[in-house]
Image (tube, rainbow, N blue to C red; front, side, top):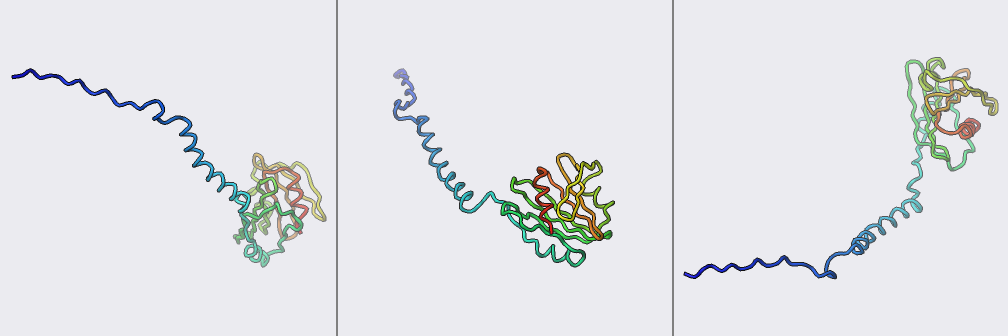
Length: 183
């Protein structure tokens, strides 16, 4: 019997330096993916106005509220203002219309018109920590200016049969612009 000869194990196959993948190949692969994504994003933003807030039609809510009280709406605002929400609700204490706006700096402002007594409505909307900080006069209305919840400012006017509030986390100039536009 012949002794078993051992066959040496083959050496692991290795690629030549030019045959492997290089970092440049990874960069090309990423470019192939990122360029179409970038083109779609540019199209979405510039052509389709993809980052513009979606405007809401307020007709139904305003008509419902108009049956209960005289509704004020802004007139003469620039195209940079958008209505983002409209809600009308009748409650035991009265009726409330809430219209949400986005100002030109993309900050939210809520316009509340209600027949709920101001003593109930104001603390519920502004918060218990609201403090009066001044006044603002626009047309025939004198608005009371309050600091509300942290970062919020509120403009409040009480009229014979309703209370109007503007509440927002925006600068005072935009609040004054909306208050002055209400007719």
